[in-house]
Length: 409
Image (cartoon, rainbow, N blue to C red; front, side):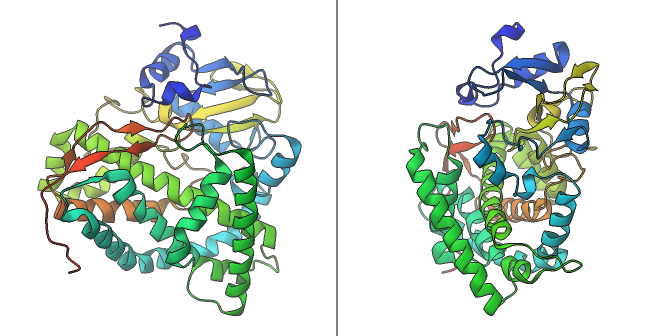
């Protein structure tokens, strides 16, 4: 293998799964590598692949900005960039600090605890729909449904509208995968419809607030400061996408990991006390968000490599979480791994994932119920991976299991 063989900018190279052998080579030979990007507006980007360097880039907002060019791999024109910069994901302190202080009011531990009873009921209902038939597409019929229902409940979206909202958000974000591509005009129309829906929902919450997140956020105030209508719309979009994509793909990818390591499934069946450490290992091993982007604010050095002001920098969580200097035998799926200081949620700093505790709770409930109700679940065909260098996703996963009686009957 040579550096010239590695192209991380082409999503087609991820269609069969994450090319972990490429990242292992980069960590050894070129941990901070200038990578040409023939499809981008910039000539290329710095690809950062070692754990310590990735954590540094993520945390050091003074030298590596989330705002200057946003956090997505794709280069944006000025109009699109200006809108993205109003989203929390694409802010630097102090603006990010102000925004986070406001939205934190909707993510209290009590709010997450109050959701758990609903999450258990939703999970049982999802399994009830497939348990008698003895087979399913795990992604479409099991893992995709739980985050949809949970994030709808959290946001205060009626369950009847959940597929509408997430269809709009998926069309807005788009996809390089041929199965999910949409024409640009569909994306534009979807954005108009989603923002109109968010405006109407927030107006209702102001007049008739309940215990949901957007009821809280429409009233939230810190030292006289409140979220503007546009900020609420953009946060609605962020949650609709982030709260859905990441958890769905984590659950799907973790199921694949268990199928590839059946001894770990049996280990967890035999000792349910391993579930907390198993969840952390799922997050490390799968790493559903594979990278984020930053822009250098001044000349600086990462891993002995000089970075120039204005350079595009992409740090790869998926590589950091397999770094041999941090994790023993990193390509092994070990549900008892300790310590396990993975960076699936960002590795700390101001951009640590706001929904981390909610995601952990969903994962715990889903696998707890699967272990109880579909203990002999197994692969019934080859999984299909999402063509993306951003999301480590599974599109389809045929599974089979012994038929059983629904618990809700």
